[in-house]
Image (cartoon, rainbow, N blue to C red; front, side):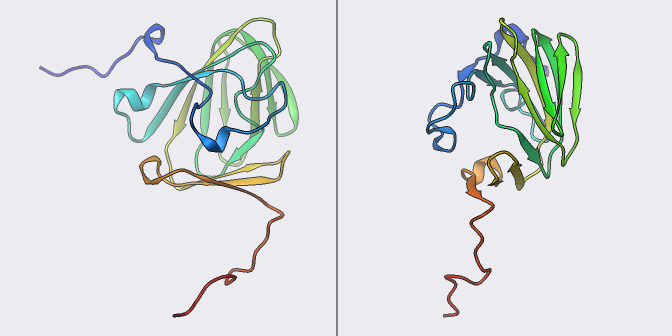
Length: 168
């Protein structure tokens, strides 16, 4: 008999904002980096479709303003309200809203309310992925998760293509 890959949203294990990931550590502004996160797709065995539950306390954000160059995301606001910064404009979001972030669109979700904001994020899982962070002018490159951690650098750190290469 087959087992149905299924979980109830109330049973999702949440972790603090990426504990142990050095890429996400370091000093941040008071309103940055707050919340809990649970990987749903991965826990159910999904390989091509990502899904996670994000829980953001009042006045916090989970991720900086960013652009995906390989993946698109769709968000369903489960409860609460907040603000989406999308292509440098701000829009109110409320419980029940569904938002698409197409490939190449700059976006960020903020909890601007006085209560918890919960949302599901559905995404394609295309790797390698490259993200840009327009506010800080950073770029990140992410291999497949099982192939290692991703790298973050500043766009201003331009290097010649052949720098430090040897032809031995």
